[in-house]
Amino acid sequence: MKVSAVVISHGHAAELETSLPVLAPQVDEVLVVANVPGSTGALPEGTRVLENPRPLSFAANANVGFDATTGEYVLLANPDAVPEPDAVRVLVDFADAHPRAGVLGPQMLYADGTWQPARRRFPTVAGTLVRRTPLRLLFPPFERQRRHYYLDERPDEPVPTETMLGAFMLLRRAMLDEIGGFDPGYRMYCEDIDLCYRAARAGWERWHVPGSIVRHEYAAEIDKRFWTRRNLWHLQGMLRFVRKHPERLRAVV
Image 1: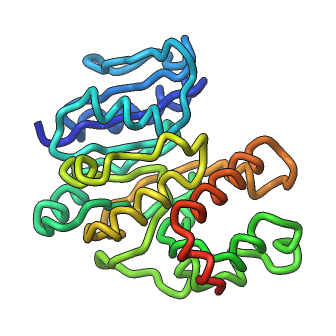
Image 2: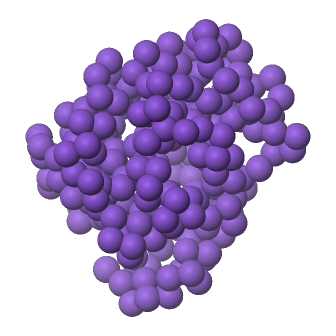
């Protein structure tokens, strides 16, 4: 089997009814990991569903999906990520031609078709403080952090990247097997950064492939308010990341 799609649902029935009919014809199997009962709605024929007996972290759910599928590649997709008809094929073709490509991501567009900064650098201390505190009111990240978001680069051809928005990622199973998948200790947020960082340290390439296009709602809830549960989860994720990789504390800009 070539490509297995894993989609994690936590009350996302409406989103799945939009995205899965577009995604399913592009892959060999679709597995929905239902983190809460009744969160799937009407699904395309042949879709498999695994219902958790209790809610798990996003990273743990992803690992459940990896273990329950067999594809050479695993496509991890958010319920609100809607790929163009050839989006998966473009990613797979590039991965087939580049055997050390372990993580590949598309160009994301917002629902209205405008460009979304999906290609990212690994986080730094200063950049994170600006993005996750009231400082971002003075220094809007999507205007000032041009280096972090590669805002001055909009390539037409595939380019290497450090990390990427984790809403739609093609992952080589050989890489997942080598590095052990996601770290389930991340509740939500930063698990994709950690995966890309560990992949890099193991010699696996990460690629942004703009010929593959995915429309993504990108709620970005932690960018809208400061003191919420999700902001706390993000802070916990970043603290876990720097505890695991303390050398990143030296990357201050």
